[in-house]
Image 1 (tube, rainbow, N blue to C red):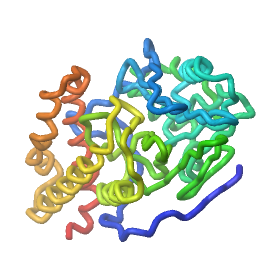
Image 2: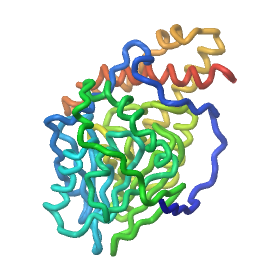
Image 3: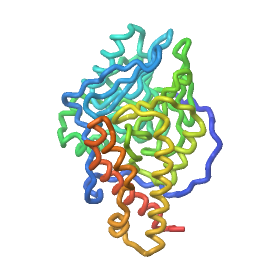
Image 4: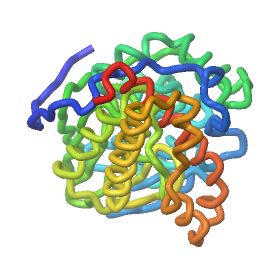
Length: 335
């Protein structure tokens, strides 16, 4: 495994120091709905975002999206999906555009729905990931167990997968030259997972964000880690990259306008939990007294897409998870 790193950002002082380990769905607060990630029946629809830049959008959100970038020498793919069958759909989409070799697959985080398809790509394709992502990927059996509630407890979803670890590992920043086109990889900090990676094509202002930014109309998901760390990472994202189009790891295509929405939500989340702890409220009291803000609900009702409204209840459940996580992280030091 080769490590390539280039420092790209000034540090931010942490707002909430606690980094919390991932928890099983069985321990989640009432109202949490596991995102349905079973890929059965899903298609990946190719959308050209700029010359040589393509999003692969799932026909069955929130089943994972993907994408690829074509240069003179070859192709870079973003995320390998959940199994060999879905990885095959990605490669079929690439072959409908170009016969150039797939040089790289970038894993935007360690979760199996982004990495289990690695083994279905050619051996000469280099797998690329952030160093924390690469380290956690080694716990392969635990990740399969973790994902089961998200795929209807159907173990056959993983029947064709085997562990394939990254060949190239970055720390904060890496440039990959595809020939006449450079793709930039950024680790901006801990968000949804410790090693969240943004894949960015500068001239097209297109970013793939994995789970760091999910689809249009959604809110952050603190699957592990604290709201303060997530807020710091999104602030760094906002100041580092000029993004027009975002292909999220899950959900509908969105834009850079999601960044201020995330900043606002996370700031409000931190403040509301801080006030609840100062007032002596228990976790249960805090969750009951802190519903999801109306503005995050109304946009679903007003959306032209039925898919946004469809996941309104899911979004409320994510908010309850986020309250739970933030309360855990702040309880030891509510100031």
